[in-house]
Image (cartoon, rainbow, N blue to C red; front, side, top):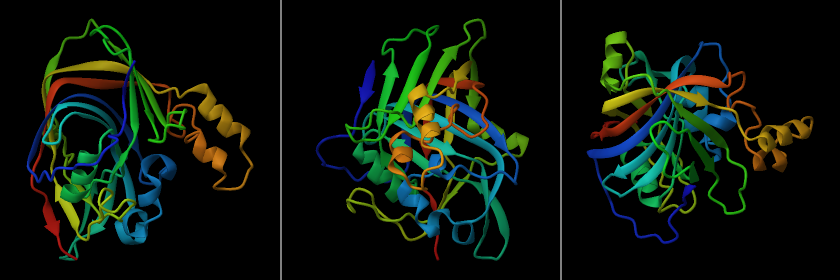
Length: 293
């Protein structure tokens, strides 16, 4: 089992955009209608969830549904070194620009990483709401035909239940193929993300806050992508403990301690999904467009 944990010491480089990163990426998509209700405890970290300027419909825009993604990155190269990452893009949000026109953009609502340099720079550069987490990949030396179990935990050593778990099962008889996220534009799906200003967390020099909206267009490319099955069943202890706590007061510590309490991670989600692994992928993160208040 391979486990990545937050760095114990802080000596953080400033790494402005653009970034070009290399990674192995696991992706699965899901679709929600405009009437869907977001599971707030899943898509947001508590800091952004309780900050109206980032998560409230009035200040940050209404969730309008559409195509969403969960993405797991294992970065082998980046301007701040190697790290692991879980990113949640639940769908599209409406917003009103400075010109008064309405538009819809995708948004990273929650993202968790295994080291501090990318946390600080991601928040600073693109308004990406990064927070620390511990990642576990089992087994560490999986072959192309072997399943890989990914678990993501809160950073505290006392956290023993993952808040996200997925097992990726390769489909050996399907061939690899090239892919680029930019191809979604041919289907009328924008890859542009529009991020609200971020609240400042603790410590302030790490969990930095920002003042302006930022728009960027990350591009993911791979010459060797493959279709996989993804099993989203969460550990039994997680959702059973949540069931046992049903009926207790909102905010009860048991609910927080044992994760989101949904058997297949997202409310109403089926267990098995087709997804994709992108081997030796390149992620390009350019200079964002700053939209002043």
